[in-house]
Amino acid sequence: MSKLLFLEDAYQKEAIGVVIGHTPEGGIVLDAPLFYATSGGQPGDSGHLEWDDHRTEIATTVKTLDGGIALVPSAPEELPPIGTDVTQVLDWSRRHRHMRVHTALHLLSVVIPLPVTGGSIGAEKGRLDFDMPSAPEDKQALSDALNALIDRDLAVTEDWITDAELADNPGLVKTMSVAPPKGAGKVRLVRIGTEDEQVDLQPCGGTHVASTREIGHVRIGKIEKKGKQNRRVYLHLDG
Image 1: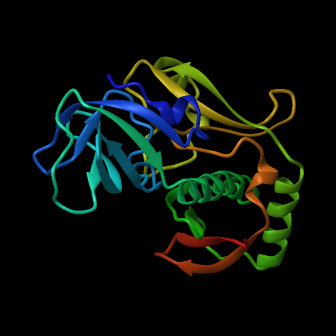
Image 2: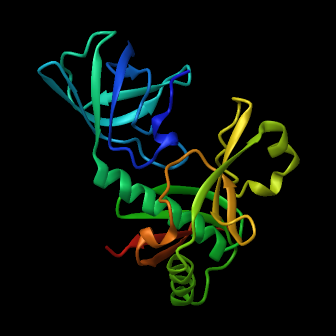
C-alpha cells in the first residue's frame, strides 16, 4: 500500500517519490504519491515530475484497478524507470482551489440539510445534487448563510473510525450516490468546527483547507431541476 502524502499534509507542494511501477496505459506509480487521484467528485491533481535531466508533465492522477494511484503524463514520452527517485511538484494553485471548493461544498450540505445525490468539484465552482422536490425560494439567503459559516473561521480537521463504527452510525453518510472511502478497516472523517461546537462531520477522502475563512467569499449560482426529486445547486468561488 502506497503512503498517501496528500492525506498526511494537504499543503505539501513538493515531495520525493520512488517509481514502483508503470500502468499499461503509461501511468507512473509511486511509493508515496503527493498527487490526489480522481474520486468522490474531486478531480485528480496535475503538475510535473523532475528526474535526472527530465521533466514529465502530469495531466491528471487516477486510481488503478488494484486500488493504487497512477500519475498520467500529458503526452506519451519516456517514463522514469522503476526504482528512479523523482521530485513531485503539484500545480498548487489548482489543488488549493479544489480544496476551497470541496470544503465549501461540505458547508453547503449544512446550509441545505437534505440528502446529497451527487456532486462535482472544479477549480472555479462546484455543485451538489440534492433530493429536493422544489427549489429554494431565496438563493441570496443561502449565499448569506454559507458565507456566515465561512466567516466564522471554523477549523477543518480529521478523525478516523473503523468500518464497523461507520456501519453503526449511518447518519454520518450524507451522500447517497458515492460510497464513503472504506475497506481498509478504517474510515476518515472530516470535521468542521470543534467536537464541542461541531458544524459538520462526514466521511471523506479528499483534500480540504485548514479553516473555513480560507475558502473566501462564495455565491450560490443557478439551481437546476434534475428529475422529479433532484435539484442541482452550483457554488462559485468569488476570487
